[in-house]
Image 1: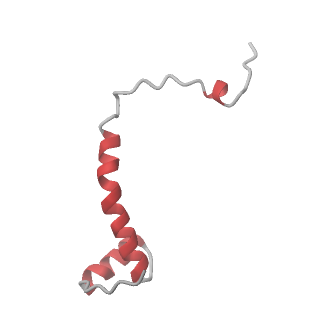
Image 2 (image 1 turned 180 degrees about the horizontal axis):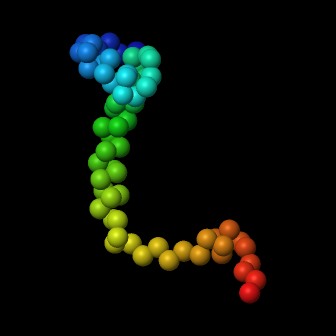
Length: 67
């Protein structure tokens, strides 16, 4: 979809530098994705230390333990 935006050129250039990309479209898209993902990451962080993940990775991978 084609959308025309008026964007502060200095902010766009700073974003491209931080994101290490060269084209404007990708910079805007990545910035939007980060805005959308941030609340989800904060919600995930709120679970830190609250979940007991007693997981046997060998069992999940179908490996048999030999003693």
